[in-house]
Each structure stands twice: as structure tokens, then as C-alpha cells.
Image 1 (cartoon, rainbow, N blue to C red):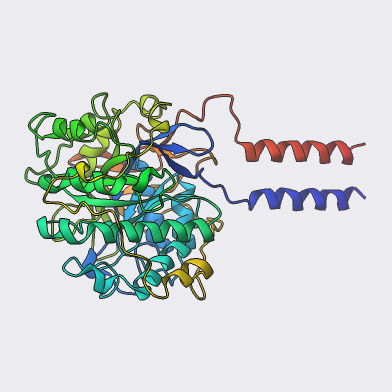
Image 2 (cartoon, rainbow, N blue to C red):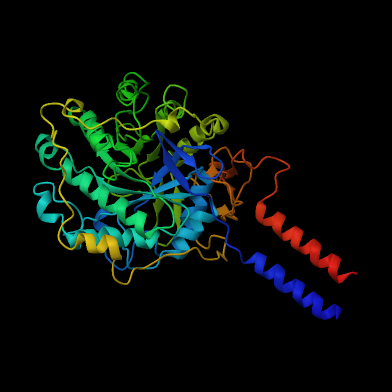
Length: 483
């Protein structure tokens, strides 16, 4: 009898060990991103993740389809303090389970673009009506299907830098609202939770305010208007080198977005006119002058490409090297006050969008809020779902150690680099207390990998809920077996 009971106990323990930990979904509430369970504010500490660049995208593979690569990059990003990645080009027909699960395990969320540079997979800036069709919607809905079930899917970009000149401001805005409406209606019908949909704008100042106002407002004052964006991203490179809050025009951006009713953040930042980058803008972006308005930002970019923006160089022999830009950014991140960043603002989360009206935008921008209807065949897709959707799911992450050799910026190999899975309710943050790897000493000095840490939510004395359940179950079973 005792042997049988021990076997039962072993099975129970194995079942608990196989449970996949998950981050808590983030929602857009008013002008803040908010943890849907704790109610704490979520500030994006992000990085653009598109190895190979846009030109390197080919269907059948994408940045989130290779588990070994994602394990390496997740460990490096966790050590840096990243809590969000932005991925631009995705194939909704392939499997992303392991990569999504790895990033989930280390507390990193995903902001995903639904478009791609391939023909027919984005709106045509010159003639948006010709590209807004059922085939295009099938492409965008396929990305939603592939990622909707991952709790660390933070949101979808319905467009990226589509409005770049005055003619674009006349022709494209209504179609952006239509795409937003269609994506949000699809999510509402085919996802178990609401997932934010937004837009990423180019920093073209004459068009910036008009684009934001046009996309965030509510048609007819309907706060449930599905065509209004849930967040607004800005790709801005105005802070270069040792600029400051005023000379970079960050002060102007804060004033511009001061009455936003949706989360606003930098969907790209990191000027390279001065190298190496010193990242002084980090203290401003996450400081008291900007955090009441901005919800963080996404550094451009992770992998060093020919454009020279990267933090990590991928070498021909399948190794990788951290660059000085990485060290400097880590140093800036480690100065941040995470408790302050997570402080909620009840007023911000209650904001509602203004009613759409022509006076919101300038005379050179489209002021018509009668947006295009769903194209032929599109409503059937929204109602019934796309054929044979590729639905992702979290899987158990069984490997934690990084198999590739990673070098610190001084050339020393980092020993023992691994991901550090976090408890269910935690996202990754900088300022590290737990080292996942150290670099050996070289003639040029000693390098260390960055140190990932967990948020202040994991205070001493608070036990992970999954472990509480495990210990309670084990206690009951032991009580039964020993009586």
C-alpha cells in the first residue's frame, strides 16, 4: 500500500512540474498599459527583434520559429532587463510555440506587426483601396490566430509608418481605421481575451499630431468604437548623443501627447549619429517628466545589421558578441526606479477618447471619419474565422542553458549563460540581482553578463501561487498516506 501511495504522490508531483508558468496578460486602459490581474502599470522596456532585417524575411521561417536561437536571445535580453520585444515580419502559418514559451518564461512580452514587406501583405501607401481586400485580411488574421493564445502577446500593430507625407495623410487614414476595426472585431470573436491593436508612426512632425488625433478618437462619441486604436507608437530618433530633454524635442513630444487617451510609447528609438550610443535618453524616457504621458519605448535594435543599429553581433561561426552599445544601455537601465514605473494612475486608466470631428486635425489631413466598409469576403472571415487557423499554445521549456558561445564586449566568453524562468505573475526588469552568466578574465579586463532580476511584486514572503497549490496538495496527500 505504501509503495502504491508513493507512486500516486510521484504522479501528482510530476503533473505540477509540467505546468507551464505564464505571465499575466497586459491590457490598455485609458492612457496606460496595465497588468490585467494586479492592476499595476506596465512600462515597456523593449527592443526591436528582427534578425536579418525586413529583406531577410521569407515565408517558412521568422524570428520566432527557431527555439535554439530564441533561447540564446531570450537569455541575453533577460540579462539586459528587457520586458518586451517587437517583431516586424511573421509567418502566421508556422509554429512559434517554443519561442513564445521561452520569452514567456523569462517575463518578456511580444508586440507584433501583422503586415510584412511581401506583395499583398500590407496596405499600399499610394493606393490603399487596391490592397485592402479579403486576401490581405486573411494574412493579418493569420498572425492573430498564431499568437492570440500566448499570454505574453501584448498587442498587434495594424500598420507601421504608412503615413509619411501629405498625400498619405489624405488617402490612408480611413483605411488604417478600417484595418483596426477588422482586427479588433476578429479578436473579439475568436480570442478568449481582448488584445490591444495600435499603430506605429514615423516621426514626421507636420503629420504626427493629426495621425494620432485621427486614429484615437471615437466616431460619433462611441467609446466602444472598434476602429479607434488602443495604443500609439512613435518611431523617433530625435535624441542623439549627449542631447537633452529640450534639444531632443522630447519636451515637445510630451506636450503634444499630454492629453492622450491611449498609451503612447516609442515604438523605435536610438539615434546612431554618435557612436557608441550612451543612451542618456533612457533616464528622461523613464523619468518623472515623461512617464505621466509615455509608456516606455523600444530600442532599435537587437541584432547588428548593415544599418549599424544593433546591440549584439551574430558571428559567422554561430557565436554572438555583445557590443559596447549593449553595455551602455544596460548601465542606463540599471539606474531605473522600477517601483516608480509600476505605480498606477487611476485617472489615466479612466480616460476615454474624444469624439471624432474635423477640428481635431489640420486642413491638410483627412477629416472624413466615414471609413471604408469591410471588403467583399472580409465579413465572412471575421464571422467564421479563417480556414485551418494555426493556433499557438504555450509548451514546457525543458532547456535553459544557452548552447552557443556568447562573448562580452571585451571579447571574454560568458560562462553559464541561461534563461531564468520567473514566477507566474512577474515580468522581467533591469537592475539585476541574479546573474545568469559571467565572463572570464582577459587581458582587457573582466566582463560580466548583465544580471536579470524580478519585479518588486515578488516581495519576500510572497510565494508563487502554483507552489502554494503544490505544497497544499502534497501536505494533504502526506497526511493521508501517513495515517
